[in-house]
Amino acid sequence: MRKSDLLVRFSMHRGLAASEREAHTDLLLLFSEEYPISNFEKWDTPLDEEWADSFFLRYRDDPDCDLRWLLAGLWQVN
Image (cartoon, rainbow, N blue to C red; front, top):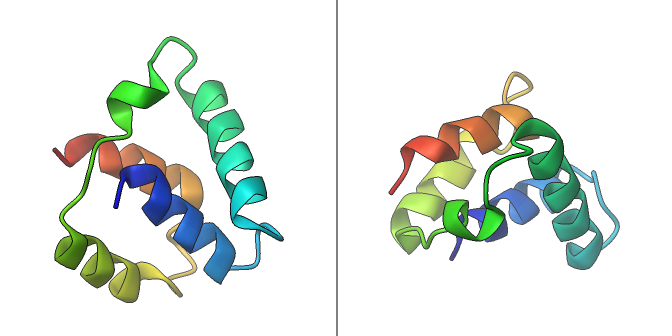
């Protein structure tokens, strides 16, 4: 699982997108807004599957954890 896959999973769980494709497109737009000079492909590194599943289960329904927070937090991983 890559970082983008985890964020798409959050997006789908929260009903922010109707499809995985839409969620991924929205993520690309958010990334380019938040980090206009950064490279998405360099950021989108693989995650440990167990860690990603645990992270998702812990934060999936946390109202204080939005996609911007997740995006910023995943800079610290890998």
